[in-house]
Length: 138
Image (cartoon, helix red, strand yellow):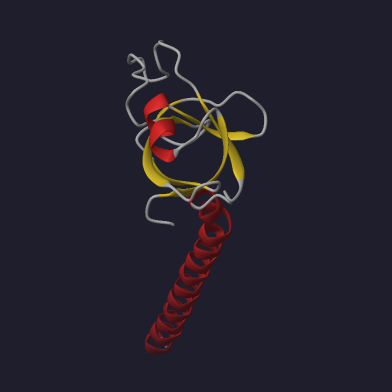
């Protein structure tokens, strides 16, 4: 009798192991789907034909550092400081790599605020239409 109990217990543990393996595999598949659907949107925001502006006030930036207008930088509402964008001016085709170093723009409908240095390099005189991509996703 003891032998048959042992076999039933062994079969039950195999069943539990199989159920656990299935559950872990299923949750991994759901995680991939979640990342593709939601995290992919964060990593690669749709950013064709949007408006960017130029700012140059002598002030402190959102990081607590002195804003230097002649350096190449930009302001974005939500991206982490240090994130590098590849920005293309759709009016003249010029591209720059621009780090996020401040918060903004605060005007509705704009995706970025360029420092004066970045605006000069990309050829933006105030307002311009741009395509924005995270570096590595362009």
